[in-house]
Structure formats: C-alpha cells, structure tokens
Amino acid sequence: MQNVKSQRSGRLGLPNLGLGVGLRNQHFSYLMRNDPQVDWFEIISENFMDNFGYARHVLERLAAIRPIVMHGVSLSVGSTDPLNWDYLKELKTLAEFVQPKWISDHLCWTGVANVNTHDLLPLPLTEESLSHVAERVGQIQDFLQRPLILENPSTYLEFKESTMTEWEFLTALAETADCGLLLDVNNVFVSARNHGFDPSAFLDGVPRGRVGQFHLAGHSDKGTHLLDTHDHPVCDDVWALYREAVRRTGARATLLERDDHIPSLDELCAEARRAADVAAEAAA
Ligand SMILES: [Fe+2]
Image (tube, rainbow, N blue to C red; front, side):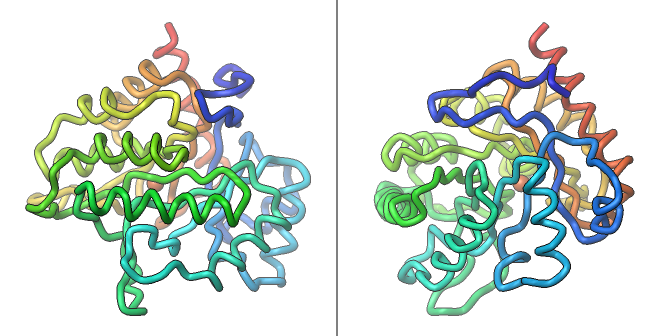
C-alpha cells in the first residue's frame, strides 16, 4: 500500500501512514497469529484505558509492528464543563504506552453538568464558542504534548444562533489553536444531506494543510435523514467524495471505520485498499 504514502502531509508535518482500520476485539485472535494487511491501526482510546488484560497484550504486539493512532470519544472539547483532567491524565498515560502518531477526538460536546450523554453533540458555531474551544484545545495540547486533530462529526440539528458554517469554524479553530483536522468524508456527506449544504463547499472550505487524516465509513438512509451507523461498506457517493477530497488535499492517512456487522479482517482490509485505488485516480 505504499503507493498512497508520501513522506509528510500538509503544514502539520504528520506522516501519511497509508491505509488503516480500527482495532476491534473481533480481530484480536486473528491478529495474534497473522501479519495485518494494513499499514496502521486506530484504537478507541477509552477501550484501552485501565485495561491491562488481553486487549492490552494485543495492542502491545501491534504497536511493535505498526503505527498506532489514538481516537477518543470523551474529550467533550465543546462542553462548558471544566476539562476533565482525570480523563486527560489517563489519556496521556495511555499515549506514553502506545506512542501514537497523533491523538484525535471530535468537535463536539458529550455532556454538561457532569452528565455524559454518550453522544457527539453539535456546537453553536459562533465566535463565542470558537474562542472557548480554541482555548481548551490549547490547554489540551500543552498537557498532552502531542498533536491533537479534531474530527467533524455527523450532525442532525443545527443552532439558529450559528453565525458561520462548520468549515469556517473548523478553519478558524485550526488556525487559532494550531491543531489539525480529521476530515471524516462520510460525516461530511451525512451532514450535507441532513442540513442541505453542498459537500464540495465543505471540502473547498477546510484548510488543506491542516488535514492530517481521513475517515471513511458507511451510513444508513432513514428516509428523512442519514444516520452515521458504521455498519456497512462505504457507498459509492462517499467514495466519490473521498476522490474529491484527495484531489484537493493530497493523500493522507486514511482509515476505514466499522463498528457494527464487522466482517473478517481480510474483508475489511480489502475494502480499505479501495482507498488506494481512489487516491491513485485522484492523483491522475
Ligand atoms: Fe469518523
């Protein structure tokens, strides 16, 4: 899969790791016996915190032979609650073990008043929330001492108070807080359909040099809206949007997400390898 790799990508200087898949326990025993057919793995950070059993053993083996990236769902960077320093300490401890290439989470909030909704909720896209989130990202990066990249979530509602588009907010945030972006192409597609914006405008609007990673995933069409379910293969429309994204941004570390109806690792890796073909088409 070397054909989609380059030395360094964008202004962040993050390496293009090639093609990756999420590390899921359905594949643990296979991975202990076989060499993975992908370039790198992404872990859900929370699944490995305070976990010193078999999962940690598998992670240790893989970290020795492939780059690992840590992807979290609990940073709640957009919340008005104080930052959760206990969580951040655990994240940093895990990062010292994993030595990830970078750490990612989402531009969202997951709760307030110490109530965790376990959902990635959208923010009002205003100057006030921009300066709030930028300050918190600065504190987080100072503490972790590692690159933080933030992902655009799939969203299902918008705030009427918002004064900017999501891509304008992400651009201003990345520049102000000096962080990177994880561009989830499926999430762009889902949110674009749900809110009626042009997904190409999103791709045009994000700063290319700040994009450190792509996500690809499948979604479900619920008739009235699209739902980000990660439970089946990437659809042709999202592959076409990925082609557009690579054409604008250049090749970046690309991860195929699957969290339900998880197939064999061989099948998942075969789907991930399609990203190399699409990236080559984009380059051509
Ligand atoms: Fe994602």
